[in-house]
Image (cartoon, rainbow over all chains, first blue to last red; front, side, top):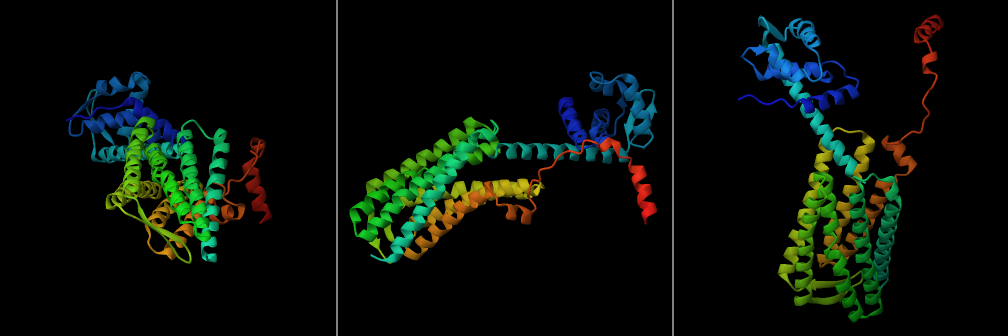
Length: 120
Length: 267
């Protein structure tokens, strides 16, 4: 069963991490979306078009392709198995889990922030 | 007619004054609060006013006991029972709104506690009370209805206290700046203190325990004051002081590489 990716939430989380001075990894919206799509397709080939379906509204094809090469392939998070087809590695799954934790951390902090905001 | 009763009346009066003063100070600071925190601020104002309104007739009651006027004592007991039975209403609203953030849900939940309060008063007034039994330190009444006591314990106190403890755990489990932790946890501890010792005060059958409970209610009120207006020494000791500072505007002019070189030469 594939989980849906909430681009708006991912953007919110990325902005939160950027506000903490973390501009790479969890603070990078492109990284987040690519890894979320790859993580969702664990054990299956992810088509580049599938990633672009989510990233097209805010990033061009070139920068996503470049990110795939310079971050994901270079660091061994994903492997290119065919033209426009990638598969997530074990290291990539680890990164994907970390990304999920980063979302949980954001949600927890947001909820607590709201609670504190409501305290007189 | 003993000095113990006068001491009791003085403590009740101190609680009344400090609760009203605290409610007034909170009301005056309304403009400093955001729209989101205003509902909770007002629920706190109502809560502290109700505490004050409970202890004002109680003060008169203790004086009546000192003067040997049982009719006035009973009348004041019945009067104090009204604000007392609704103390849990603003408290439940406060906790629900802080956690959920929805005014409607919080209002409906606290409405349930209005019913608990009304039920308690109904049983209290229809079944009546036994007393007063005046002793060295206090004047005691025995509630003549088991149902009223059960409503009182379960509805008015156990649930709201459990809510406070839950909220406290939520705050303690979260890593947050010391200043925020102090500002959020201490008011809850203070409210819990006041709330629980009010319960003890109302149902105890031991005169010294009633006096002790009232002292703790007073301590709770002082704690609430400290939570919102911590003295400077306490702020410094706990490391929660907010320093006033000016931003360094000429930061760009400083060349850190040069500074390092100078330091190396000095050494």
